[in-house]
Amino acid sequence: MVLLHVKRGDESQFLLQAPGSTELEELTVQVARVYNARLKVQRVCSEMEELAEHGVFLPPNMQGLTDDQIEELKLRDEWGEKCVPSGGSVFKKDDIGRRNGQAPNEKMKQVLKKTVEEAKAIISKKQVEAGVCVTAEMVKDALDQLRGAVMIVYPMGLPPYDPVRMEFENKEDLSGTQRSLPWPQAGLSVIEESEAQLWWAAKELRRTKKLSDYVGKNEKTKIIVKIQQRGQGAPAREPIISSEEQKQLMLHYHRRQEELKKLEENDDDSCLNSPWADNTALKRHFHGVKDIKWRPR
Image (cartoon, rainbow, N blue to C red; front, side, top):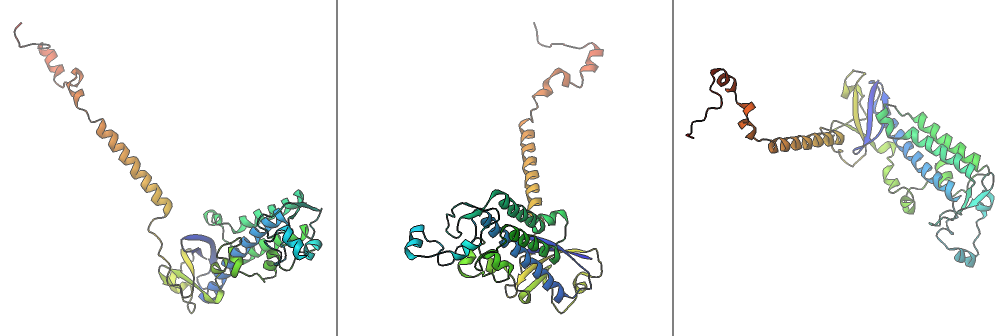
């Protein structure tokens, strides 16, 4: 199995394994699917953290309004009255004005937060350092766990306009104002499967070929591939040394400079005038000519 280290730009994303005989059409779709699914889990986790802190989403016509404005306009949050968390709610005002402030109690809040942490661990970029490959099934399991936690805390469900429910139903809106809350440029991060491109060694891996056409038949090969939107051109090439290696090199150079500086400061020849540094002292001692002074008394 060829090991693919998938990156977007210079950022590591995940590891993926694929046989060398895999069609690049299939592989490109698979990489794009995992990449987009990881982004989806990140968005759901971000919104679920807000859900745990401030309750369900307010209706769009009530968001950002003060209590006085809501009362003056005679607006009512009907879904908020239906979608009550298990065990009752605790009021915690949302300063942004996006959620109704009816947060779950501490026990239910921990259910959501623990599940969020577990899901984040599955899609974490640290999996690359640990050498763990991420598959579409693993990401799907993470989403299922998040969905299950929401069902436990909100058995009556969430409002149809709540971002968490919209994500689970694949109705999310990543354009317009949603892109600034709470995931910036989410719409730009997602790559359509039909528009995805894979690049390796400054070459585009064309969908009409097989992976082995580029990397050979060695199934133990490890390559760094970069996923890119079609039309964005070739991504930047990988640096010769990594940023961490560059830091270590600069640190070593700095230490060496300090050592040379200290050696220059200690380069003093005055010690050569000391008696113990005289290499003819033993010879003069046996000849009995030690401590002879030539000047007259």
